[in-house]
Image (tube, rainbow, N blue to C red; front, top):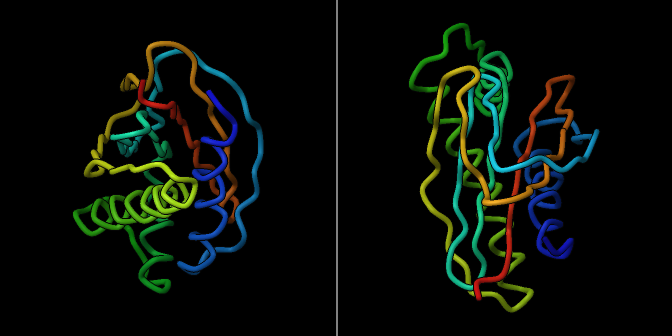
Length: 155
């Protein structure tokens, strides 16, 4: 996996989240994993297609998802994991991946992104690649979001 193809995803997270009202995210650990993501409770998978192919999975706990929804709604308290939270999390994933797609276009790649697919279940297994993929742990106001990604050129 080419580092030039990974950076737009991380850059999008660092750019977009503060625009949505969050403190500046902090990148924590970066590491390789194999094939599957194990859900921490709430995962959103977005595919990348056309001249690039791959997947981005935003992986977090339900409490982190509620925190994100609350912040996106200007601090309105969110007590239950409901349809409003689901919508906010999907929108966050869509905004982040769309921003990365814009950066890919600026690099000369024609790309599309798929509709965010939300899964709510702990220890659920999500296939992200046939081999290795990269996981970047991000700290967002004391809450952890794992950004798992695999992006490669379409051959």
